[in-house]
Length: 591
Ligand SMILES: Nc1ncnc2c1ncn2[C@@H]1O[C@H](COP(=O)(O)OP(=O)(O)OP(=O)(O)O)[C@@H](O)[C@H]1O
Image 1 (cartoon, rainbow, N blue to C red):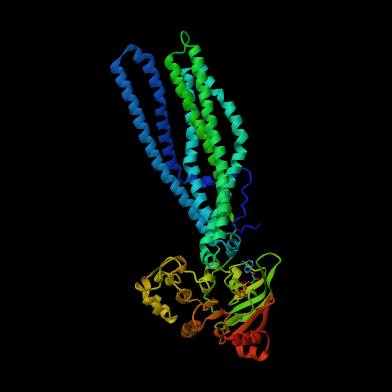
Image 2 (cartoon, protein in one colour):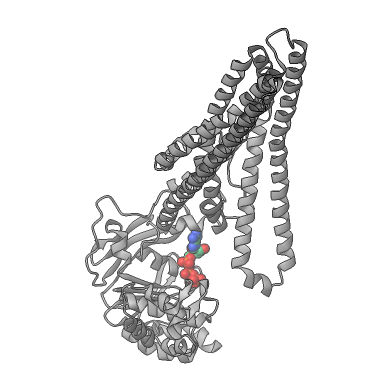
C-alpha cells in the first residue's frame, strides 16, 4: 500500500474492535490503585450531591409550611456543606486523574519510542515522518483521557444513573416511569447516528494525519521550497489539506451536537410531562408540590449521565481507532533483529566477504544479484559507479540495515545475520553525506560517537579531522549550541564534526558514504592526512563521486549492473581502459 505520501489516507475503516481496548488494560492496570481512590472519591462526591433534591423536598413540604426559621437555616447550612464537600472531593479526584492520565501517556509513549528506535530502515522508507509523529504525540494524547478519566467516568456515570434512579423511585414510582419513557426514543436516535458519527471521526483523524505529514515535509524541505519559489503552490496544497480537515471536523461536530440536542429536548419533554402529570394528580393522591419539584430535579439529573455516557461512547469509539494505530505501530515487526541463537560479534579484525548476495528493497526488483567479493582486514575499498547503481546499498548491507534476499555477508568468517546487531554495529563507523547534527553543543555531538570519551579525547579527534580550528573560532568553542540538523553550521563543518564523531567511536570497519563531498579541496587535502591516520589498520569502504578522493584506495570496485563490473587498483583499472577509465578521464576533462 502506498503509505508514503502525505495525501493518502490511512485505513481507519476497520470495525470497532474491543480487543484493542482489552490490550490497553495493561496500561490501565498499572494505575489500579490511584484509579480506585479516584473512583471512590467521585462516587462519594456524586452521592453527596444527590441529597440536595431530598433536602429541598423536605424544606418545601415541611420546613416552609411550618415557618420553622431555625430549621430552615440548619437545612440551608447542610445544603451548603454538601456542595462544599462535593467540590473538594471532585478537586482531589481531578488531581489524581490528571496524574494517572500523564502516567499512561508516559508509558505508551515510552513503549512507542523504544519500538520506533528498533524498527528497520524499511519502515521509515515506507511512510512520511509526520504520520509517525502524530501517532506518538496526538494519538497518545487522545487515548490517555479515554483510558483514565473515560473509564472512571463510564463506571461512575452508570453508578450515578443507578443512584439517581433509586432516589427517584424512592420519591415516586409513577413519575419515575414517566422519566424512563424517554430512554427508548433516545436509544433509537443513537443507533441511527452511531456508525456515521464513528466514520466522521475516523475521517477527521485521517485528514489530521495528512495535514501533519505535509506540514512536517514542508518544514523539512523549506529550503527547496524557497529556492524554487513554490510557496504559493505549497500554500494551495496546505489550504486544501486544512480545508479537508476543517470540513471533516465540522461534519463530525454536527453528529456530536445531535446528542446534547436530543438529550436536552427529551429531558425538557420528560420534565414537562412530570409537571403535567404531577399537577394533574396533585393531592389528595401521594404527589405533593415538593415531590413534583424533587422529581423534576431528578429527571433533569437523570439525563445528565445519559448525555455524558453518550459522549463517552463517542470518545471510546475514537479512542479505539487511535489505539488501533498505536498498537499497529507497536506490532510493526522488527524485521532486522537478533536471530534466536545470535551471539555477540567478537572483536572485529576486518575481513569482509559477500557470498552470493542478492538484495531487493521491493520484492522482485533486485538491486544486487549474486554478488561475491572478499576484502582483507585493513584494506581500503572504494565503491564508484553511476548514480543509483547500488553503492550505498552495498554498504548498508554490511551494517545489516536491511535483510538480504539471498546469500550471506561474513565478517571475519561470522555470518552477520547470526550475530547480535548491537555487537556488530558498535564496531562499525558509518559516515553519511547528510551528516546529522543533534540539538546540543558541538562537544555533545562529537561525543555521540562514544559517550564516555573525555573532553581531551573529543578535542584530539576533532584535531585529527581538522575540525578543531573552525570550532575554536566560535565564541563558545566546543560548547557552542547547535540546532537540530545543525543549521548554524556549513555542510562541510557538519561533515567534519561527524568525522570526529566516527573517529571517536574507534570502529574496526569504516564506511564513508560521500562523506567528504561537501568539504573544499584545501580542507580535504588537510583532512586526507587525518583520514590516512584514521584508515590505518581498519577496513574501509569509501563511496565517492570525486575520484581524486579514492585514487589511493587499495582497491576500487566499479558498481553497475547489479554487481561489481570492474575491480582493481587505480593503476590497474586505468591500464584496463574500461568503465573506470572512462569515468576517470571524463572527470579529468571536466576539471
Ligand atoms: N529505500 C529504498 N527503497 C526502494 N528502492 C531504493 C531504496 N533506496 C535505494 N533504492 C533504489 O536502489 C538503487 C540503488 O540505490 P543506491 O542508493 O544504493 O545507489 P547509489 O549507487 O549509492 O547511488 P548514488 O550514487 O546516487 O548515491 C536505486 O535504483 C534506488 O532507486
